[in-house]
Image 1 (tube, helix red, strand yellow):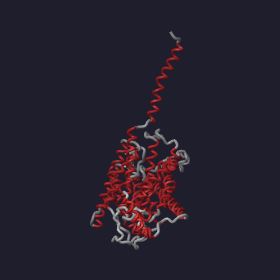
Image 2: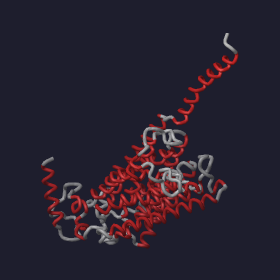
Image 3: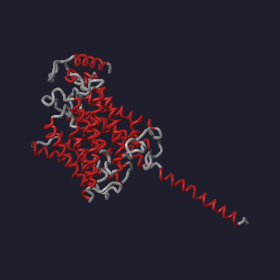
Image 4: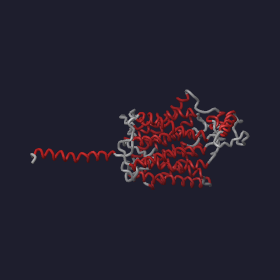
Length: 468
C-alpha cells in the first residue's frame, strides 16, 4: 500500500497525462488544414487563372483590330508572368505582411519567407495557397489596365509599368483593405475587390489612356471589333471564372461561399438582361456585344458586395450596374472624348464605384455577421465609410499611375511610332500574324501604304510556318 501523498502525486500525474494529448489535439484542431476548404480554394484559384488566360485575353483580343490581337493577348500573358514573380519576391509581403503601422505590410514575407504549408493565421488553408490565390488577383488587376492603352503602348513600357504599378499602387491598397491596414480598421467592406481590383484598374486605365495619348485615328477611323466570337467566348470564360473570384473569397467552402456564388450568378444575369432591354429600347436592336458587356458590368458591381448582400439585392445591384455602365460607355465617353480603347474605366471603374457604394446600401449582418449593416438595414454611416474607400482608391490609382508613366517617359517613349501603329503591333512589335491569311495585296484598308514591317514580318512568318 503506497502512502497517501504518493498516491495523490501519482493520481495528479495520471490526470495530467490524460489531459495532455487532448490539449495538444485541441490546439491542432484549431489550426489544422481543412481539406474541403483547401480543395475549394485550389479550384477557385484555377478558375481565376482560367478567367484571366484565356478568358480576359480572348475578351480583349476579340475587341481590337485583327492586326493587334496577339499584342493584346501578350499584355495578359506578360502581366500574369511578371506580376506573379514580383508577388513572390516582394509584392505579397508589401500587401499582406504584418506591418505594424497600418500603411505598409513590411518585409517579413520577402521571397515567400515563412509562407509555407502551415495554415495562415485565422484560416484553414495553407498559407502558400492563400498567397498564390491573392497573387492571381494582383496579376489580373494589372492586366485589366492594358485595355485602356491597347493598340498603341510599347511592350517594354507595359512590362515596366506592370512591375511598378503592382508594387506602388496595388500592394498598398490591398494592404489597407485586406491586409489589416487602416481602411479595414475603419470598417470598409470589400468582399472580393470592388476598390482593390475594379476601381484601381478602371481609374488607372483612364489615366494611362490620357497620358499615353489617343490612337492616331481616334475617334473617326478606329477599327471595329474584329472577332465577336472570341469576345463572347472570353466573356463567358470571365463569367465562369468569376465564381472562383467571388465565392473563393470566402476562403472556405460553406455557407458564405454559397451565398457569394448565388449573388454573383444573379447579378451577372441581371446585368446582361437589363443591358439587352436598354439597347432594345434605345437602339431598336439588342446586340450580343451589349448582352455580354452587361453581364460583365453586373459581375463587376457585385464583386465588393457578394458576401454581404441578399440574392434579391444582387439583382438590383447588377441591373443598376447596366444603367450606369451604359451611360459611361456612351454619354460620358462621347462628352470627354478620352480614348479608353476597351472601355475599362466605363465598366470596371464606374461599375466598381457603384458596387462599392451599393455595398454600403444593401449589406446586412443577416447574410454575414462579420460584415456590417448598410443603409437599408439602418446604418447610413456605412455609405460614408464606403465613399471614403472609393475616394482613397480613386486618388491612389490616379496619382500612382500618372507618376509611374511620367517617370517611365523620362527614359523611353510610351507609345509606338505612327508607322508601327498603322502596321499593327502584332507584326511591328512581335513579328507575328494571328491568322496567317495576310496577303501583300490585301484589300483591307490601311491608314498608310504597306510598310517594311508588313513585308519583312510576313515573309519571316511564312518561312517559319514551312518548318512547322
